[in-house]
Image (cartoon, rainbow, N blue to C red; front, side, top):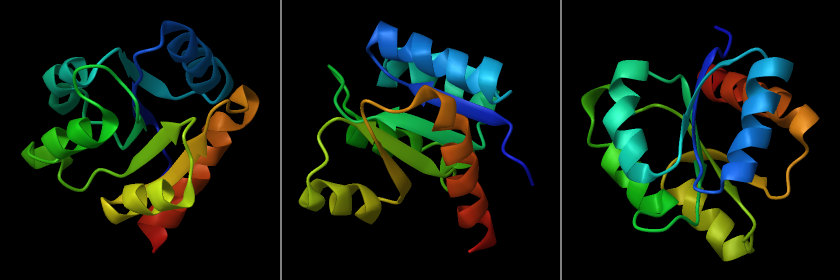
Length: 128
């Protein structure tokens, strides 16, 4: 099954814009772009993402809190998540994997490769 629907949660408007172009125009995904964890929670079930791309550092609800809240929604209990962060020390990387992330993308990311990276992580996840 190919990856088609991605929900991206990112508070920084410029990063959201770059990711939106990379994921829709370049990769051809259907994208739900959310500017906060609260926004993601309000829209996620109706959108039914196949994969969630989640910023770690956000105001009010950070990425870990957002993921915990999304996991409370029945349809998103097992949806794969990829964290995106500029803060990438080994202990933190392990923490993200421990809460169920299938991958971590470091900022700044390469926009032209973002869709391929997500597709590869998704394929590895569904075939493992």
